[in-house]
Structures are given as C-alpha cells and as structure tokens.
Image 1: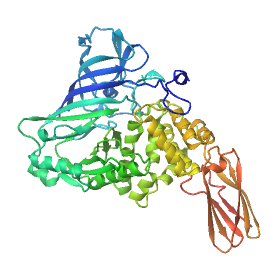
Image 2 (image 1 turned 90 degrees about the horizontal axis):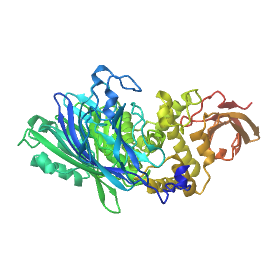
Image 3 (image 1 turned 180 degrees about the vertical axis):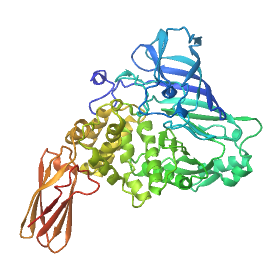
Image 4 (image 1 turned 90 degrees about the vertical axis):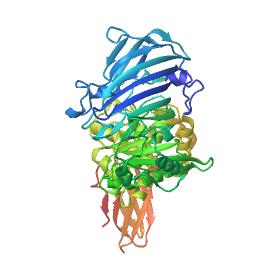
Length: 598
C-alpha cells in the first residue's frame, strides 16, 4: 500500500512519521426564517493543504442537493422533502469572485461541487474561499435533519463543506445519497446563528454569548447547570407560558457558537421546547467537566429522563468502555426524529418503552468517539463507527433498561440474515452496500464481532488495545488496517484468525453437536463448527438426576482453525440431554443444537 511506502502509516498500526491531514477554518453567519423555512448564510473558509501534494482542484460538498427533484437517492422522499437544494449565490477564491453562470471552473454533480483552481495550491499552503448560499429546510421524511413541527428544526448537512483529501484516495468524491454518513476533516468553526428573539438555539460547541441572548434568570440557571451534578430545569413549562426567556431588545438574536477540531457543525432551534441541563466531571485527573443538555417537546414524555440517560452514558464511556474521558465540553440531546449523531449533538425522536429511549440515546452518544473523536471514514467503512456504537453500550443498555438484551437482539437479527446471498463481508466499502446488506455489515455483524473478540482475548487485554488505538488515532483518520494492526501489536497476539473470517470473508455462524456419549458420570461432547465464523460455545448439560451444568467457551477455541472441539466434563450423574447455544450467540441452524443420550 502506498501509504506505507510514503510513511504516512505504519505496519504496526501507528501513524507514520510522514502522516498528514488537511483542515479548514470556517466562519459562518447564518439566518433562519421559521416562516418560510429559509436558511441563508455567508461563510468564509481558510483551507490548509498540509499534504505533500500540489492540488489543482478543490472538492466541496453540497449535501442539500440530496433533496433536489432529480437527485440520486437510496430511498424515496415524499413531496414535502423536495427542495431546490443548495443554491450558491456567490463564490470567491482569494477574494476573486467567480461568475457562476459562465465559469468553466465549476462543475456540480450530485452533492459534489468541483472547483478547478486557476493557480495550484502548493503543499503546506492555504487558500481562502467565500460563499453566499441558501436552501429551504426539507420537510416530510428527510433523513437526519429537518422540520419536526412548525417551529422546531434541526439543521444538519447544511453548509458548503470542503471534502476530505487524504493519503489513501486523494479527494473523497463519493456522492451523498442518504445511507452513508460522515467522513470529514477536523476543522475549527465560528458560527453565528440569527433567529427570531423567541427561539433558543442549541449547537455543536460552546455558546460564546449566553449573556446576550438569555434573560438574567435563565442565564443564572444556564451557568448553574454547568457546575451542578443535579438536573437544572433551565426552561420549564411555566417559563414557556410566561415568556420573556430571551433577549427581547431586538426582533432577532444572534447565538454565537465556537467549536475547535471537530468534523462537523450542526444546530437546532425551537420556540417552545423545554430545556434541562446538568454537568458531569468526565476527567477525574484534571477535573474537566462536560455540560449535558436535553431540549424537547413538552409532550415527549420519554424525554423527561433523557438528560440522566445521557449523563450515565457519558460517565460509562469515560470510565468503563472505552474508558477514555469524554472528549467534548458539551452534549445536547435534541428531540427531533429518528436517531442521529453529530459532534456534541444528538437528534432523537420520541419512543414508547424505556428500552428504546435508552438504546437510541446511548448509541448516538457513543458516536462522539466514533466517528467524531476518531475520524473514521464512515462512507467506506461504516462498521468502524456504527459497529463500535453498537458494541460499546451493550452492558450499559442492559443496566439502564432492565430486561432489554441488546446482544440477543443483534444475535437474532444476524442469525436470520447471515449466509444470505446479499450478506457481504464488512471490508467491502459501505458505499457499495444497500438496505439490509448495509445494516448487517455496518451494525449487527461488527457489534457481535467486537464483543466476541473482547471475550476471546480477555477484557483487560482488549480494553488496553482499544485505548491504545484511540490514543494513537484520535483526531486523525484511521483505516481498517490501522485498527487491526494496533490490536495485534498491543495484544501481543496474531488475531488474524479472527479478523479474516469476521471482517474479510463471506460466511455464517453455525455450530452443531456432532456426538455425545457417557462413560459412567463422565460425558464427552464433540461440537462441530459447520459455519465459517468463530463464535463462543455454550453447552447446558442436563443430567439424569435433573441437575443442569453449563460450560461456556469463548471463540478462541477455534483459534487454530479447528472444525470441531471436544469437551469432557465429570458430572454427578450421567448426561441425558445436551443443549448448545444461547440467545446471545448467532446460529443459522439450531436443529442440530439438541442432543439426547440414550
């Protein structure tokens, strides 16, 4: 691979001595008109070419073009979601304006905006862009962002953004068609959001001017929440009825947010949402705290506890798994639709049943590590972040939602689809996968794989390698081989026996009992690996006297490539029945999982 030859990556999984990545500084002024749903903005971008390459073109992303009538999409949108897309009003390079009607420098294809430079951008230099643009907020069933009632919006995938130029592919020119999500550079954002004076705005980053937009009573509660370990109701139902929450000296307020070294920026707004917040010390060594907020509709009953679910999630991630202090100063859970993550923001719908609220909230918050802190390429390898966000909260979700078993949920889903013609290996780029093929390869299969690997090599060894991976690659762009190689080196094991079948091969999980026989009170059981994926072995032996003995072996029993494993056990009386498997272990054929000894 050229990255090894060029010294940008190393075969031990660490960033190479010549590793580089590009970045941008964004300064954006945006105005939102709630009546006509118009978002209009001006932005200046300073783009830094830190690569050794001379760039002759720059690629921008116009995500809102997904909503144009003739756009290529992975799913249908209803008529309310169809808009004009991103409308570029003005574009200038180093203060030289380009004629958008006649210039041959610009080509727009789908959600990609290609700019041919008149003068090349040399290595270790920078260039400035200024852009005026607007779009209409899509309504209806738009994915990940949009209109949630007449005056509540989440604005994501919203500003012209420089694409990623990296050491693997050069420019990322994959079209955004709806399913695949993030791959962005780490950049700095300075964003001013102008809205009517009855609206609150929640966003990525830290609010720079709370004293300018909040009346003193609410400013005091906002400041208190940062220091408090108990929930502060910044805006409750009575406050909404009484009004006078925000600065009313002008018809509009400007909410000013800043965020450094993040991969995206999003904001949400409403004039009738409740607002709760609480703080948490995420780094006990330094005392660093994170401000955690929930903004939600009064009718969303499940959201009244979301702030505490978020707080417990962040505490778990900081101290248990991955055991890395939460990297950001704030996190807001916004009551929008579905479940979607952004840097320091979560977009959650309302759900019936505590388990669903717990699942979605904890899942989306874990994304703050993957892909935001770790900068993975979700367009190509969604399992590097969606799989992690499936696996990391397993124990947390079971704790916060008693009776809910996320492992069993994933095992059942995988058992139904594994081995199907359209089930694809995870290493296949995610942009080539659709529908259930994408879902299984990105969420279900990797979530189980990470969990089985952790049990196979031991939690202590896994967690050490996991933290080493995060230590080496946070704020960078790791690829699968970086992940595999870091784990191999840190664990001191050649884990290719696991990586190959789970991540590179088509295959399926299937164990069966080949034979079982008694020799007095000793039983000998042969379990056969019929499928190709190494999974744990769970045996429940029922003796003649009715006593049940359980034997659980992790997936390492298949480490040497064996097709069967023999298990001997001394019992209190002869074995009568053998049951293989449990609901947390996927198995495409359970007909050979029960064996009676006659």
